[in-house]
Length: 87
Image 1 (cartoon, one colour):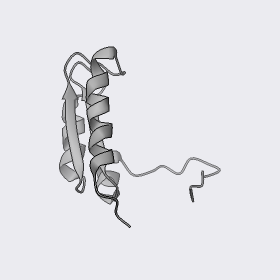
Image 2 (image 1 turned 90 degrees about the vertical axis):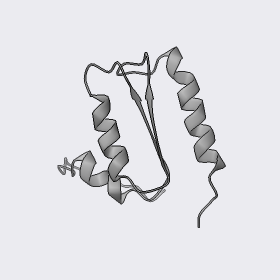
Image 3 (image 1 turned 45 degrees about the horizontal axis):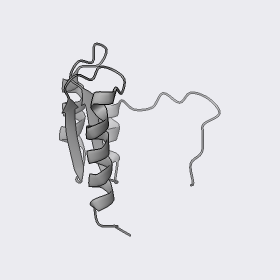
Image 4 (image 1 turned 30 degrees about the horizontal axis):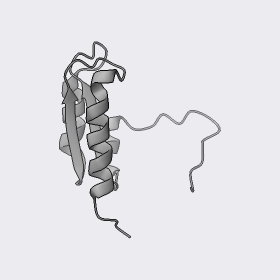
């Protein structure tokens, strides 16, 4: 896959700076009830991300996936799979 793990911590850029560099479809799923990371953080990443992108704030979901989040996960996977393949 061409991925290498650095032998030591390299202090990567913050997500808000990395998100615009991603050149594949990105689905942001975030829990509306997340007590650790506010949903507004996901919205900020979505705003700077390149297309195609998708944002879904899931009611009833906290910081981890719960049964209520399964439909949103499935919708996001279906969305990604329906996109045209780019070469």
